[in-house]
Length: 194
Image (cartoon, rainbow, N blue to C red):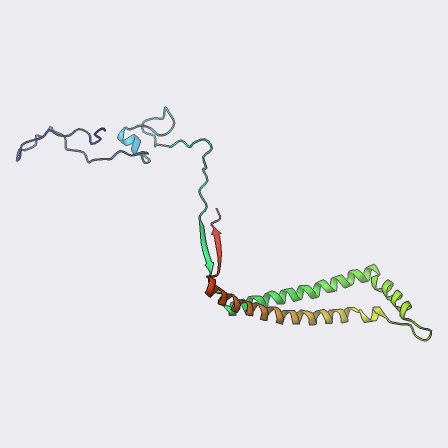
């Protein structure tokens, strides 16, 4: 084991005055595995960087071959212990309204595409021939499946969907809160994006 404290002054008798040419004792520095930045050049120790580096350059550690240089991603495990029923109701109401509007628009676009392809006229003609008699023309599919009637039926379905989806989501938040009281809730692992 080597002494890293440097040169120590000789032992002197009690009460003797130190001579002016003697050097004061340096503070003790324990040995370190890796010198900090700037310490290797200041102490005159070994350079941890590349060989042949100048004595005044900062110390640099060489990375191992194949070692990861990217920082690790921090992860946190969180638990959803309670869902606020009021906020769940508001969010589900807005989402179900958006879904209802999309349903009405999709029904209108689908009806226009089928009408442009001639599906209603072809199927309507077949049905009217099959259900017709000598004194009547039979069932008229085109008048029954007109665009205003289809849109009204779709709007009624969308309104019922808004009410049911909002009620079921709110009821689901109550059920989740009760079950989370017993089992602790759903655990999530969140990772920090680098």
